[in-house]
Image (cartoon, rainbow, N blue to C red; front, side, top):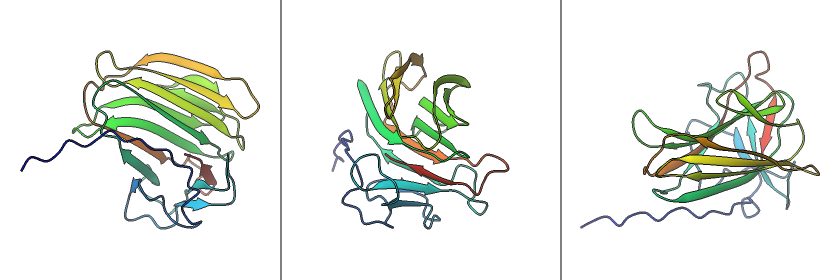
Length: 193
């Protein structure tokens, strides 16, 4: 028979129902990973739990650890929001992409060295050890524009966009991964989604 079309992902995940030390249940990630991505009670933006990424010299390739969701979004505007906190030596990339080969990207944010950047351009400050709420909206088809808002805890929102990235009409995947900065690869990193 005909396989039914997958519905767009609607996810609200605070990891409160996932035991500490466990991996997130819906997210996809490399089977090679051990405890590099786990739920923890060490830090939380709201509630009691968050998702912790830990990178180090033995974690290869450079984009690991990473996780992603298949969103099944093909048209219209979609929104992703999350809270993120990182220690001083870190790099996090949040990227939307499709499943074509080579893949096409939508919004891509790099959190590194006290700033959030897109295509090398600084969009907002990203202070270490501070929770920042991130909201990204993107049009998946048509002109493929996107915008973002960054709000540090206790601070004022910083708006960025609209930006253009070609990703017309393709089922999407949202990925997040860390890349270790040279010389600082043993730093622990914590992110909240």
